[in-house]
Amino acid sequence: MEGGARLVSVRKTGNGRLIRRSPVPLYSQVKELLRERIARLRGEEHEQLPSERELARDLNISRMTVRQAVRELIAEGAIYTAPGRGTFLATGEVTQQLVGLTSFSQEMTKRGLVPASRLLEAEGVTDHEIAARLRLQPDEPIARIRRLRLANGEPMAIETTHLPLTLCPGLLSMDLERGSLYELLQRVFRLRFGVATQTITAEAARPATALMLGLAEGEPVLVMERLSELDNGRPFEYVRSWYRADRYHFAVRLGPLRT
Image 1 (tube, rainbow, N blue to C red):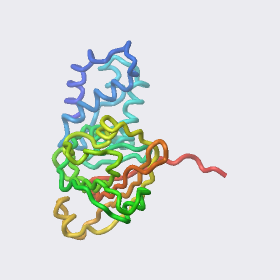
Image 2 (cartoon, helix red, strand yellow):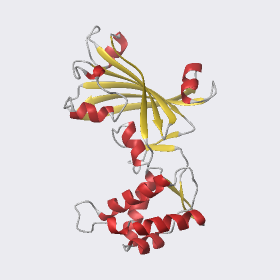
Image 3 (cartoon, helix red, strand yellow):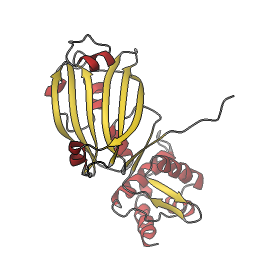
Image 4 (tube, one colour):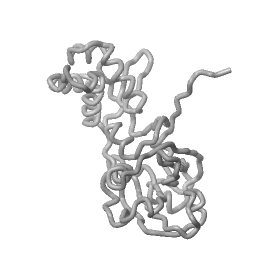
């Protein structure tokens, strides 16, 4: 268990970073510490992690605290468990839990991956179909932003975002390759996000899509469409994205059956 032994040794050096009298829960601190160490071992997928008992001992905390941190990392797809064998680093695949409106940058960062964007297009357009989705007049100006989304330098998705320019004047002249577009909309334009409706289908990759995503023509891609609203119910974003089906998964947690 060479990979597990390495992981234990680096965790010992992080013990002093746990602040017990912090407003941040101890399990959250442990989770971030584990995530940092996991990120350093990217490229060594399926390496076994130490047991909860070993982690609790080396960090001088309770197993219950370790267990909560580990469970959340499993839910995020950073690690996985094999019954009777232990806990392991996940592959380069990403599983997004569909529980709330989050950005691509947030999802990648949560998994210890480095998000990046390559801007393919950013222009003001008029589009009657998109305007209808956003509840705009047919000729109202719309920002169309097309980006290649990357994780650790590898292509994950092609994303085309449409936004009413009246909500974000000057957006197209800003740096749209660095950081999160959602963070920019909230910080600069003071938009307050509400709910979103998202649908996911599958299709065969067309030539241009396959080329940008590093796929063979006809390989499967997941097509995600999302209409997002502000907290006052006004639509502010329509997105259509094409994800590599071999690297990106979507998951939904279901509650109990109601009768």
